[in-house]
Length: 116
Image 1: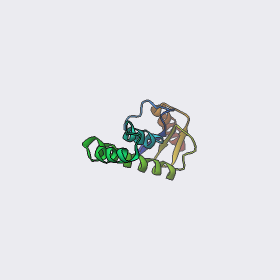
Image 2: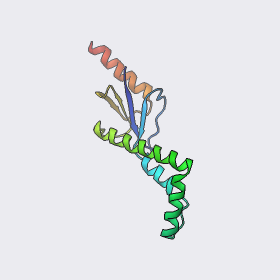
Image 3: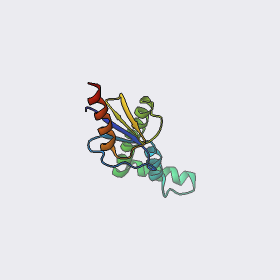
Image 4: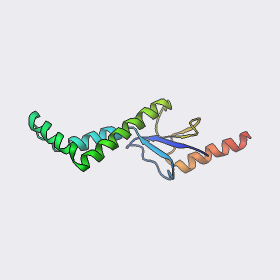
């Protein structure tokens, strides 16, 4: 099998994902929270602290991760995923509801073997 993409969220963790690309739909919210955690209540001080945080090495890393997370969410929307977890193979075959990625890809493989 070529490309395997798993779409899930933090409430539906997956196992045995191997080399699959795992997209967590709520990852952007988690990262945004991490970036804003501990900022002062005063808006001016918060803006200053946020600017400083974003210019740090950790801030740049989180920003890059946030960018990737939003791209992942856009990619998942393009796949028209209906529910999570979803295991998608070759952007064509999908198994919903299985947290075990190896089991889901095995089902797809068995289906494809029977097809040929």
